[in-house]
Length: 179
Image 1 (cartoon, one colour):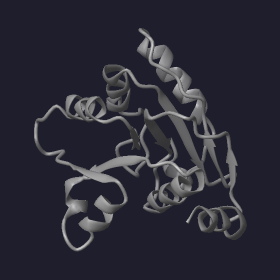
Image 2 (cartoon, rainbow, N blue to C red; image 1 turned 30 degrees about the horizontal axis):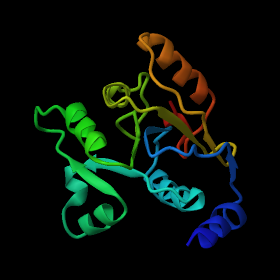
Image 3 (tube, rainbow, N blue to C red; image 1 turned 30 degrees about the vertical axis):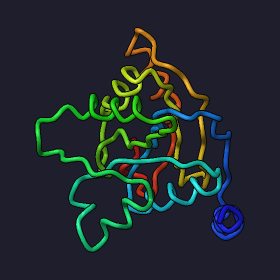
Image 4 (spheres, one colour; image 1 turned 135 degrees about the vertical axis):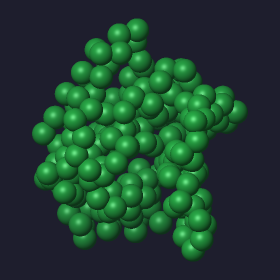
């Protein structure tokens, strides 16, 4: 499957890969920008290219028939956003209970244009004591860029500025919705 994924990604689509995925068993992977439903399939494809199992969460309605089986099969887990539950603590418990867990999130929280990233990913990484790996899906350059992992520090604004700098100028599939 990896050979097929590489053929599709590099040869058929003509995309590049900048950086390499770190050899980590646990991390929070943030993927920006999330502007189109095709981002999901690019994520599935790049997982095969780099040969790493990476999980994700999605809104509960995606996991209902007829396609729920597919999202679970590809490593997804449903999240009920309508309830007042502590999603951060629930995900931290998953990190603590598994030997290997790499969680991919789209911190924009939507495919529409946002001015600020949601910070749940940050709090998950901090509480679980795992690094954050930044990944950019740059449709403008036809490349996926993987950043160096970093652990949160005691200065959230400094960390968030580092993240904003990494994604500066990156264009999503729908450029006007890019972060």
